[in-house]
Every structure is written in C-alpha cells, then in structure tokens.
Image (tube, rainbow, N blue to C red):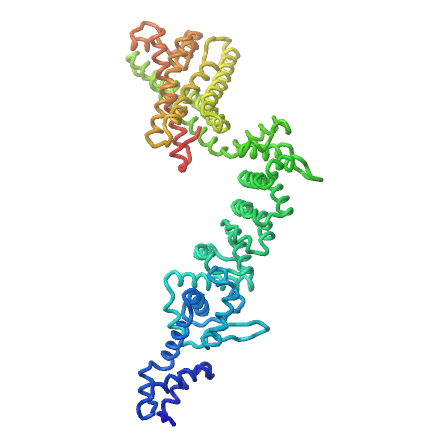
Amino acid sequence: GCAFDLPLIERLLDDLAENEDIDPPHLQIVCDTLYDARDEHNHITETAYEHLGGASQILTDYLARVLRRFNAADLNAVQQVLLSLISTDEQRLVLREIELTARIHHDGCIDAVSLKLLIEELVAARVVRRRSQDGESWLELAHECLIPEVSHWLTDTLYEVKQARSLLERALENYRAHQLIIDPDSLDFLFPFLEEIGISEEEADLLTKSLLHRGRPVADWLVQKAPSASDIIMEATHHNQVRVRLHAIESSRPVRSPALNNRLRTLALRDNDLSVKKAASIELADWFGSAVEAILSRPFENEQVSRIQRAISLAILREHNNRLIQLPHVSSIMVMIGLVLVRLRRSGIDIIRQGVGGAFGGAAAGLFGGFLLGIGLAIARKTVNFEVTSMIFVLSSLGAFVGAFGGAGVSFGMITIGRIAQKYSRWWTVAGGALGGAFVGGCANLFSVDALKTLFGQHPTGLTGGLEGALIGAGVALGPVITYYLFDQPKLWHRIFHILLGALGAMCAGILLTIIGGNLFSSSLEIVRLSFAESQIQLESIAMFFGEGYFGRTTKIALGALEGLLFGIGVLAGIEMFSQPQDEDDVEY
C-alpha cells in the first residue's frame, strides 16, 4: 500500500474541481504523477505535491508530453486548435466543432480529414473535451489550468488575430439580434485579418454587407464566400450614396447574374451620377465585350430612356475603349454630343470655377490698365482736379468692365474646349481661347457700335472686335499649352512660368494686331473720342511719352503690348487662384 497526507486529499479535490465537478481522467493523471513522486517510505506528501507545482503544473506538464507526440506539421495545427479555444482575455471558449475545423482548414495548413483525426487524439488524451448539444458537437479545453500554457503561444500577431476573431463574433451576434452592421472602426481593425481568421458563410455575408454599406471595397474571395452576395450587391446598387453604388458595381463580377446585369444596364443608362454611369458601363463592357453596344442601344419594353442618355453611356464606353463602339452602327452625332456632355459634366465645376477666376483676373487687369492710362493722361496734363479724378475713375471702371468680359470669354473658351478635347491634343486649348475671345470681341463690337449709333447717331469703325479677341485669346492660351509640353511634372515655378509665357503670348498678339491695323482698348477709345469733339480723353498727350506728337503707330504698339501683357497675367493668374487646392500642381486647360 501507499500512505498519504490527509490534507492533500482535500487540497487535491479543490484544485481539480470545476463547478463542483472533477474530471476523473485529470484526477488519474495527477495521482499517477504523485505516485511516481512518492518517497522511499512509500509515502505521498503534501510537500511533494507542492514541489510538483500543484495540479495546474502537473496537467501543464502532461500537455507538454502530449504535444511531443506530434510532428512539426501536425503540431502547428494542434496549437491552432488549442489557441482557438481560448479568448484574448484568457478565458475558455466553447466552439462548434464544425466551425473550428472550418477556420483552421481555411488556413490551408492541413486537410479536413487529418484535422479531424488530430482533434480526436486531443479528445482521447483529455486535453480537449467534447460535448454534444442540440445534435451538434462542441469543443472546449479540458481544464482551465491549461490556459496559461496555451496562452504562452500567443505572439503579438496571433493576439491581434484572436482579437479580430472575437470582434467578428460579437458583431455577428449583434447582427442576429438587432440587424446592426459592423461600424467603420471595427471594419478598419478587421480588414487586415479577414483572410487569416477563417470566416464562415454567415460572417462573409455580414462582412460583405457592412463593407458595401460603409462605402468600402469588397475582395473577390469574400464575395465568392458569401452565399447571399448577389442579393446584398443588388441592394447596395439602390443605395443613395454614390460610393456605395460604385463599390457594389466593382464587387459584382464574381457573382454576376442576369438580374445584376440588368441592374448594371439601368445604372449605366439612368443613374444621376456620372461616375456610377461610367463604372456600370465599363463593367458591362468588360463582361460582354463588343456586344455591350447592342445591350445599351436597344430599348427594352416600356423603358423610359432618352436617346441622350444612351448616347452618354455609349460615349463613356467609346472614351474607355473606342474599339468597342463602332460609330457607323449608331448615331455618330448623338454619341459625339454625349461625349461632350460627359466631359462637361465631369469637369463642369472646375470649368465654372476657373472661368470665373479668369473673369476676375481680366477685370483686375483692365482696372489696373485703365488706372495707368488715367494716371498717364493726368501726368501729361500736369494738373490735378475733379475732372482728372473723374477721368481716372471712368477709365478704370471701363477697363475693369471690358477686361471682365474679355477674361470670361477667353478663360471659359480655353478651359471648356481644352477639357473636351484634351485627350486628343492640348493645342485645342489655343483654339478654345481664340474662339472665346472672338465671341466676346464680336459681341462687344456689335453692342458698342449699335449703342453709339442708336444713342448718339455716331457710327465709328475699327473698334475692337472678333479678330482682336481671337488673337489675344490664342496668345493667352499658348502659355499653359507650351508649358505642358515642356515639363512632364508641373511644379510651382512652372505655373508662374506659364503665366508669364501666356502674358508674353498676349503681348505679342497685341503688337501683331497693332501692326496689321487692329485696335485694342486704348486705340478703340481714341476712335470713339474722335467722334465726340468735347471728349476729355486726349490720347495725343500720352504719345509724348513715346516720342510722338500724335497718337501714332509707336504709341499704339506700346499700349497694345502693355494691354496684352496685363490681360495675359490677369487672366492666367485668376485661373490659377480659383483652381481647386488638390489640382494646384496640375491645372488642366
């Protein structure tokens, strides 16, 4: 027989008890270890029990002996099984066996059959306990004293993975109970670990829905894992937020169905947001290839889609890949109109912003130019009185008015045409500047001539008109175009350079216009002055600064060059100042 200390029995039972129950195999493991540690008198003492570390350490050492049975590959899988059965706060977890095996099998480190055999071996060794409830098999660690040893295997990365797993499980419980999707902060934490934590199909559905409704992209593998992905994506395409619809379109490819294709077609033709129309059109094109033309062109029964809407979608596809859309098969004019509308709608805010900036810049240039002209006349007269002050005010105001309209015409023309045709050539910007300048110049000429004739019976000829506006507009537009072709990566000083280059182009245009007989602001004032004998504006006095006794060619050339220079600087500086902050490094014209 073998003697033992009586207090040891009570202590042993207390150490092994869990909820007032004792697992007999664990009691046997501890007793076998104590028996091997008996003294020479065949006596098992409480001191020996303490020396062995108590029941907790005895079972921990037993776990280490069990683990030594496995080879390296199997040991990795066994450790994953045991780690899955504890929480991040070192508590035992009870998991469905089918769920646990699915997680570990997802990692690809072991096949399902081998994993099942390893679990059976752990259960037989009394390291893992299996329970049956509602016809399902559940697993847990056999004793809490094993938790410290298992938790030692947790590296920082594994700890974060377990945190992610615990977070996802709580999120799934909330969704089941309250239909709450995962919040953005939790998605940010989960996202790096989605491929490591081995998600179930129900969790894949929740993640897909949460990512889409939070405006996040969804990986193809996650879409394929989610059994309800098609319905979730379909629902997201009706969301009122643009980014949600965009990500739904991007995520649709792995689960594409006729219903989803029809929905994409509807988005391509009828969605109010251009980026959504573009994404849906391109997705259809990538799926159907050249057949997408017929899909978008042919109306369905009772479909309320205008020809312009179809033309816009086809124009988007043509811009994406012009080989997909053969213009002879559709209305060429309508598609080109659609293409123009697409680019204008996409850049509309920038066009308005920069066009207004050009108008303000032109007004500032005209104000300064009129002020300089008034000051020059005042200096030439060598007198300062109310009439001189009034003249300076009138010339400054008139200069600002003319400069604003001229700046608006040139800037809107160059920016609009430049945005529409920039995919083909930046030189279209020059044509746009010339067209805008010609339009404003022509309109100003018609209005001023008609107004003078109607109000005063005068019919002056040679006032600033379409030719002057076209040449000045083209000169201004040359600056950004030449800068674009000279420098691949625009920097701050490049922007200053293209303003100066545009101003130089406008100045050269002013000189050229004067040489060929054109008239800018000051020359037009002189023409109008000659029609009114009592005019207070005597530009002959200005001519003295240029060595002439009358308003001759040299004076006209000098003033024309100055006007062009100021106008070019003002318009381009205004465009730059009104550009979006994110486009400061690359303002497009």
